[in-house]
Structure formats: C-alpha cells, structure tokens
Image (cartoon, rainbow, N blue to C red; front, side, top):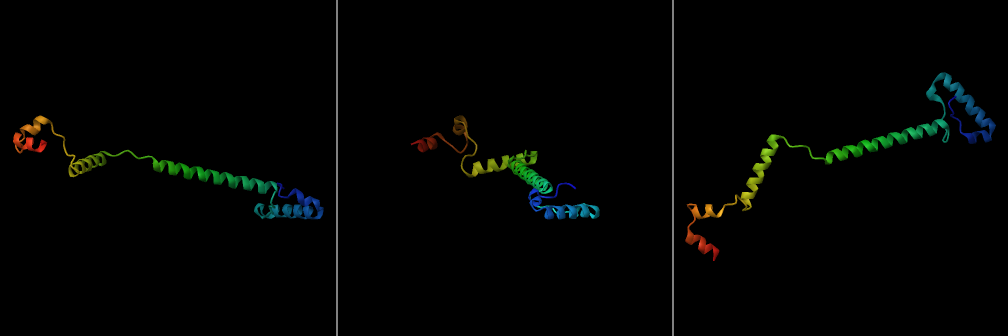
Length: 120
C-alpha cells in the first residue's frame, strides 16, 4: 500500500478505511492514482525529494556563479593585444618610455642649454 494514509485519519476509522480501500483499488489501476494526504509517508518522501532537488539546484547555481568569477587564461593573441593597448595608453597619458640621462643628453632634439632652461 505504501503508506499514503495520514495517521490522523484513523481517528475516524471510516475515513481511514475508505482512504485505504481507495488507495488499494487505485493501485490496481495505476500507481499514480492514489491520494497523498499531507503528513503521509509518501507526502513526506515527496517533500524530502523536492527539498533535495532545490538544494542541488541551488548548489549548481552557486557553483556556476563561482566559476563565472574565475578569470579564464588569456590566449597568446589576447595577451599581445593587451600589451599593445597598455603601451599605447601609457604613451597617450605621458608615461611613454623612460629615458636614461645619457639618452636625454645625447638625443638630437635636446641640448644642454635647453635642459638647463627646463630645470630652472
């Protein structure tokens, strides 16, 4: 029979007996046709299974969100493009390439008198 009868139904034996008879007859026709009253063993099992499904789905969703936060490794082309963008941005923002003093003093566009004026 599978425990589809709530224990409180046996307070009124006619209700419990009718329900048991209906379940027994419906089991012969279709296992899905029996009544599951709140608190019966089948209802408790179904509630536990639904709770397990909800917990599993929440865990899957949390794992998907966690995986979305982990950055994926860059490919070689993406890394090259990233470096080019960084170099272009530093040149635009004035960082450019750092020059050594010897390079500044020997460059064709700078003279000692021009540098002295800049310093003062």
